[in-house]
Amino acid sequence: MPAAASKIVPTYPKHPKFENYSRILPGEERIHESVLVPEGKLLKGPADESVKTLFDLLQRGIRVSGNGEFVGERKGPNKEYTWLRYQQMATNSQLIGSGLIALGVKACAESRVGIAGINSSEYLTATFALVSYSMINVPLYQNYKFEALIEIVNNCELEVIFCDNLERALTFQNASSKMPSLKKIIIFHTDKPLFANGKTNKGAVELIEWDYLLKLGENNLSPVSPPEPDDVYIICNTSGTTGRPKGVQLSHKAILTAMGGLYHQWCIDPNCMIFDKDDIYLSFLSPAHVYEQLMQVIIAPLLLLFL
Image 1: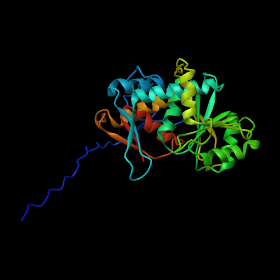
Image 2: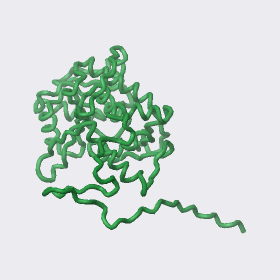
Image 3: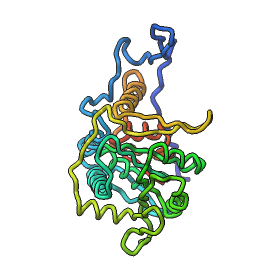
Image 4: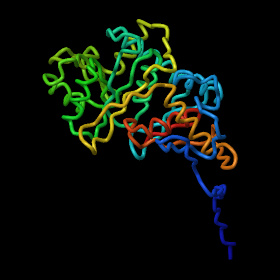
């Protein structure tokens, strides 16, 4: 009789217990800080002090991974995963960003661009395209009521938004009379070309295919214009549980400092969690959620995997 196969049980580090997990700072506000951060020390960013912005973060990913695989994605439950390496992400981001500039978007900290749709490699590429040219990312959460999205577009005066599919793009185009600032919608990759020339001017809002924008950027390549640490990276809207969603501006410095806090919480003695290039992060929470943004920032040197 064959021997029974032994069951492999993964082991995890035991997390230490403390009498108190936070201490209260002086003052009426009763602000709490983690006991894992040395008393009197102010975190101002990630452990790697060379990383000041998300642009720096992508460059660090290229370096520490040896241009390893960055983003994996499949187009169906039984399909094979395809992968983008870090340098390809940086290259594509420059092409998309250059395409935006060719469309008239300025490479500056006052330019705001919306992104509507579910997690995908194109979503992440668009994000780093905005980062590469100091533009502000305005996520348009697909689960919001459309009236809330209209309000966000108007409040941010968005002229350009990305959409993950034609159906979503047409929803915005058909409601363009309620969004007077909206001029162009870029549609992520599709199975087949949508328009004869890669774009269509029918209707008040121009629809543009992703591949057209890549080619436009290739033909009009602009040098990257990275942001400053205090520049706004993203406008995340609140859930709306206490009324209409409210836009919260987060700078590159703010989100990287929050990531530094997580690093101290997880990776410094006594917890000592270790992430390396062989780990994979399964991304499924919407990038419109600040928590997903934070997780993608801390996992950036690892693999991101989209279902």
